[in-house]
Length: 378
Image 1 (cartoon, rainbow, N blue to C red):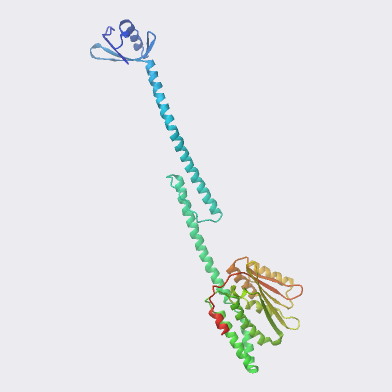
Image 2: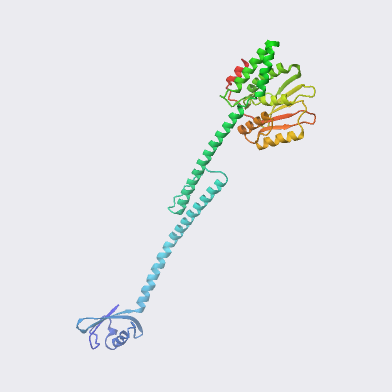
């Protein structure tokens, strides 16, 4: 920057650049008066500014435009250099920010996809100090709320299942009890020893039916108490009644619902008499593909197609609208205990009679004996 001090006459007693003395300086004054601020002296362009001082002097400051441009270029170069130096940091920062956001979005999408497939255990942990963290927190609250609601619903459903199971287990056929007591009344006069045996068998069977300590017993235990029921029927029907069992080795330790064989055999006795009034029942217990199959067949007249269809529909819909209460109860108990893949299947073979097959999963006993079984044998 060059400075010139001029008096009222335009003479410049003080300059910092000799070429601006006298005549050359005279070219600056009109340009300043025109307030353009741009002057040209001997081919050199300047940007000029002035300030009036006390005593009639004026000071002029002249900046060569070449220097200004150089300064601007230098500043631009410095800025460009700084930008180029910072560019990798900017790229890395932007990439990291983009990656973090993309990862957060992916985690959120995966979490909601898991919920859609029933997985409510996943929780989101996103620390980004932005809206994604708020979304993650909202998702976690939603998942915990769903888990809590499902647990409450499961507890209510379980309570309902237990209540229904207890109700089904307590439905001991009153007709059987009435008929047995009637037979005991007559036997006390005609065959006192048989009456005592029937009373003992009935007592054991009743104690077993009201024992609420267990819901499942081994197949051997249930067969043990079924024998008490069979004993009563042999005393009641005499030679007209025939019952036999066929059991695959190892099936006796499988767990089954308590007192679930007796109602099926009772149904076979009630509806399975042939034309002469004889009753022949066969029970078969086999294991196949991790399933326990128990088939109870009679040689009676069987069911007509309409009755069979109505009974199958009743079981499929889970509503009892039939006199075959025992079969419905057993099917319902099996489904409640083991799931919809198990239950009772009923058919009437062309050869006659009725075939009832019960399918259960193979569950084994832990080795502890039910006190009711000891009571049965004792």
